[in-house]
Length: 98
Image (tube, rainbow, N blue to C red):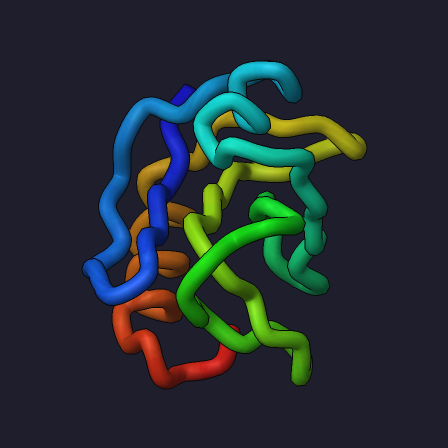
């Protein structure tokens, strides 16, 4: 499934991401949490044991790798090209809050 991979200290990239909880947690190396973005059809998934500050979302520090997916009807969906472009722009600066 197409989404955005955001690793600490690296530029976000559009890539194929796992589409199951087991695959996501295997990629992150631990259990994961999610934050649904308001007014944007996207969701962030990140590990509960992530290392290295990655981004700040609504005052919450997010550590380790972040996976960004499209979100519709409470389900993960592939990101459209427009949403990919919007999210890449929002996520490109590691110091910027999401």
